[in-house]
Length: 341
Image 1 (cartoon, one colour):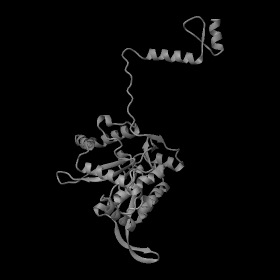
Image 2 (cartoon, one colour; image 1 turned 90 degrees about the vertical axis):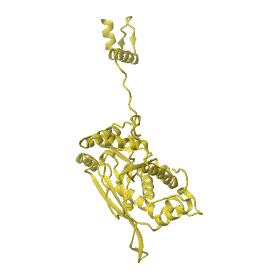
Image 3 (cartoon, helix red, strand yellow; image 1 turned 45 degrees about the horizontal axis):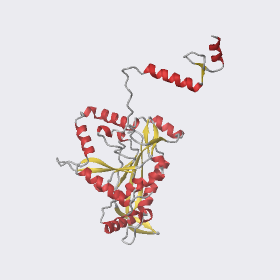
Image 4 (tube, helix red, strand yellow; image 1 turned 30 degrees about the vertical axis):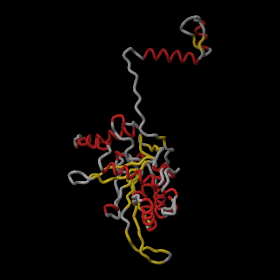
């Protein structure tokens, strides 16, 4: 008893095996942990399987006072929509597209330019490359761009689906356009097995349960951050930013809605390029103009951050050669390269 009290008094542990030999703190901890492990692990116990991680994320820096208020104010991702628009001069972009097609034979559209400019802008402004987890913003480590695609159906009614290019900011404009064209062609021809499997599964869910099913899927995908490819679900199907071309529908302006289960907080909608009077060098002349609208989640993205991204995209469209290199036959540059950045 005296030896035991002495061991306790000087901070050492006495071994249970007898002999009064003191154990170090580290050895005592190992012995205790081993004993606990043996006591908790019975003959019928099963080791838990670790779920695969879905996305490579890291916590965003602490939110400011206004952002914390916004996070506490809105609970549904359908509520905090904020909107903005910029008018973009498109003369140089239209000429760039024509020169690019003539030089490469590759189809390049305004949607491609907007999507690539958005990817580049999110690389420069990572505070916008975020998603909501556990009611706080988390930064993505990669930039993915999703484009909404009209998919013809056998019944004659068009359907909407998505084509996503990951690490879009690391691709040249030419490589990005080629990758996106391949994805869109596969989706429209229903050759994407993962997307088609998902559509078949969703058709089996009763309408009154669809909202619950989507919320559960979003919770597992993004809140728990579980990679569901092992059960046949796509990996990060919606990316960081979504682009839908209103111009292809003949619309000059429109604002798209946030889609809660996708967790995409930044949506872009380029309208049709139109001819209207503009002031150029003090003279009133006809010009080509496009309205680019944006919807963002005000809980995650501040208006100043959204404005910076929109200005960057507008600047890229108004000076495409300065952004991606020359598209003329004698030019080369990043427009036709493989990877950049």
